Length: 333
Image (tube, rainbow, N blue to C red; front, side, top):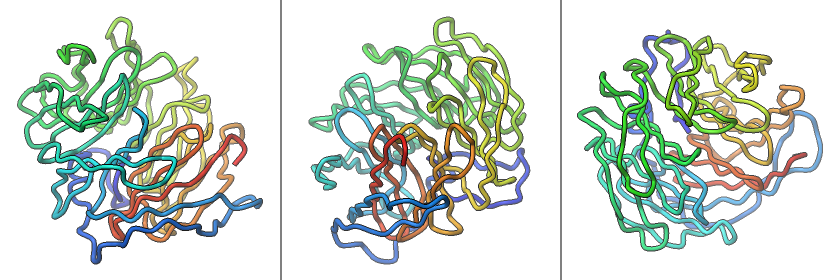
């Protein structure tokens, strides 16, 4: 769920998630609400996937799926203050809520939408029906980065030098420190028995055991940027080298590499496979989890920014045209 990245950087110069998302450009025009079908180009040939485009009233940044809806943070001039609830059955915005100044990342689960505030270092628990903030927790003086839900907790990264990963009880919203992984700690994801954290400063993906809150291992990965868990692995993007790496969670080893020139970080699991952004060709690429090869490329109306998925669909934001695109997917698509 990351925005476009500049290629050719070193790991020590990796931009923070906050910088990437807050630099989403203000759209040149506000797209009219529309739902339609687009064609799809493919790397390995077959029928195109149905694609629906939803026009948004403001510039979108991050997107999440869960709690009965698709959730998009919207705003203008680099500040995202609105949470849009999209009905996944109609591909229309059901309601919008003014949640907080500086929405940075989203996660949905445990009966709530979890919103990080880049301005105050706070994580909010938002009621998915009313859009009201039920409770919140401040995570320190640093900005809150990525947030994820799973393994009975909410997990977040914080740019505080003393605590970079925290665990939040979804019922009480009380937080406790888990690990200090360094100031560059960024994306976090949960699944396959672990909490997985990108640490580009040391070129590694760190695995935390959610039952003990202890760091299990640090897996060497060159130029890690974003990651997603599912489809038989932990999938890590490397935009600098144009690759996606698959970590086997049973061995904590990198076991395969997909060549994906032009990717810019964003990755999600949808329909049982990882999908990544290719901003150079305005496409999203499907990686076949059994072969670790690109099996499909679907062209969009503009450059993809952030992605989220579930078993039946992939959702992609475009901050240039102010749109949210839904791509219908399934295990063989």
